Picture 1: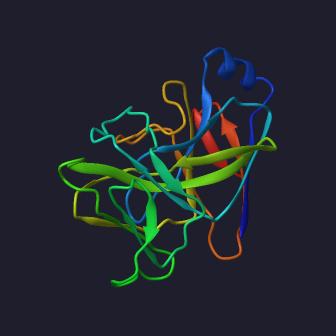
Picture 2: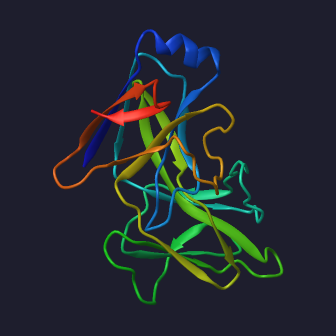
Picture 3: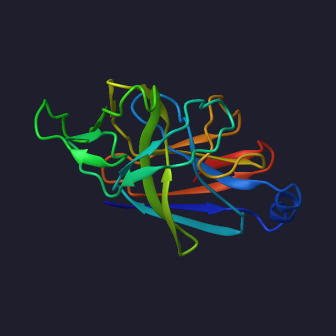
Length: 209
């Protein structure tokens, strides 16, 4: 399905936000966990439009320290990935569809870390997703990050919810392990494929219209 998020900022507030160097920031949770990576960041305008399709990819990173503020660097990915499929990642540093083994359920993505321990004791895996911001196509960007030891597996089940807020410090693809006080969860449930937010200066955050 195609989803759209419209974000409105008043002409009085916009110059203040831009002077402060604040960016519109969007993150997506995976499963029942809070967001763990910044999906999108971009300069604010009076009218902002974000669009995406619920297609996901899987990425791998050789980073093993994923503390707050770490920028994810991908070494391999597959986009789009197929849900209900078990992928392997081995010494060739590529993703392959597993020929055997139990498959995850619909809407779930699974990865087996088969990279030899001697090469990398652990790798980081996660989902990635494309978007269109202000009409510009954005390449697949990480939406979460999970450290997976060698010979372990991991599953990811994304949901159609986004968290939106303003901040100046972090860029797209940055790991976040803390909750932002001013982020606002926006759910797309049932037949709802479009939501509109407006910046409320008295609260310092966006509100759903």
